[in-house]
Amino acid sequence: MPIYPGRKPRVWRVTVDAKGKRHEEAFHGTKTEAKEHEARMRVALGARGRLSQRIAPLFSDLAADYSVHAKANLADATWRKVRVYQVATLRDFFGRYRLTDLSTELVDDYKDERRKAVRPSSVNNELRVFGTMLRWARDDRTLGRGGRAGPRASVRRARLVLLACDPYLFSDRFP
Image (cartoon, rainbow, N blue to C red; front, side, top):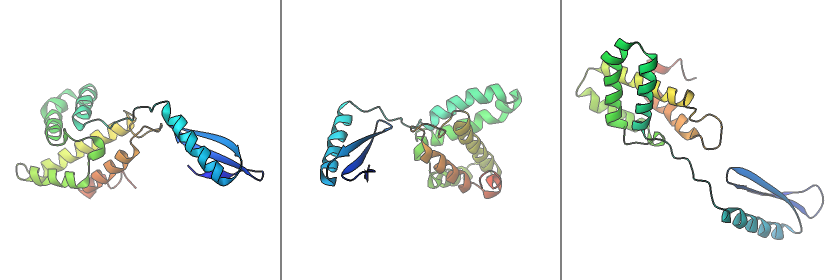
């Protein structure tokens, strides 16, 4: 983090971000000495150890969690006749990817592969379920909501993925 001038001459505010928190100290001296103090602060704060960084879950884990949610909240016939197969198909293709690895290119690959086996309407329905799963992960599992560890990038990427699906499906949901 930068070094800011203080309110008095030869006083510097030295700020360092470590372990998800901002540490700030006032330092009396020259700017060069303040930079050296910042380096010492970084070493001291880093020497205490780092918190493990949160890793985005695999899509297969999301599919398993969503299945439990869907069984509890969908009509029994909807789950048994349709949704269980859609989730399984999505899990088979996207299961090995982390949520942060999802991209529009990956969705395009999925669409191209699935079009060889099923009708376009089936692909659109599967992509609709894919979007539902990502929204459920974002909203109900609080991915990307609050806290520094939330994978905000994956939420943005999920929006891009959803927009890569047929536009009429999601045009009203994402401004």
